[in-house]
Length: 333
Image (cartoon, rainbow, N blue to C red; front, side, top):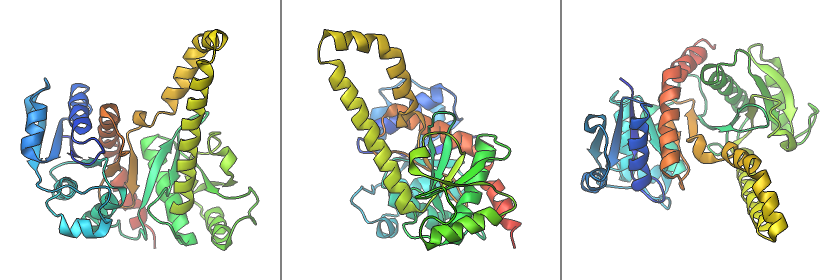
């Protein structure tokens, strides 16, 4: 039985994207059941507008909602009856196999950490994302959970990223890189240099060295490691650049009839590129290093994004990533 709990009042436009995403996920048989947490009356009213197998979507009432303005740690303590906390508690109690939320990232992180706890021997959890490249997908972590890191933390991020890549993407020996300002081992600040030494000395990592920002989209590596400050800035810079690129292309295509003709001829390539880089295709980011499975979706998620987040949560649950992580870190001395 594969059940996914969805914080139905997390996204900017909640609860409609969460409800429709759940219906689509059930119709596509991504999981056996979706459990929506939130105001039962509102959820029931909206669900009644859809046709689906009634036994496969259930509601667990929650009277509160954690907003984007709420402080992460305090909201977990003061809003125990929120849709987010209720969903995570269901997972902790063994009533579902994973949780999806498009809500406050810090709150999802805090609630997951306080409820599940860290995997033994893991010093810090991290946020890992799948990133499209010219070749295959790569995993980047951390992208926001840990602003300040030590070299040992970056080593563990690399180990968690390797396990993620092995059991989700089925890569036997994923290539691991350290995001830095240069390819040489002597480049970067003292933490980067120390991390490079630790990664290079680790016998169970296929560490191929530093990677610069210009190569993030090239696909020359499978796992990119960085602290949460660098990772978050890099991620949002790339997202902003892509949005601007598509806006410029659209503006140019509408200039005159010659440009419009060129747009028609290049549409298949344009459509392929937009689909490949569309965040709604990938669902969300995974919290790694915790004794449970939480997936964080974008606050602007639509129904398609929520459907794919549920699919991703189901796939990562099936992969046994958390159990494999426990075994790996349990074997470390």
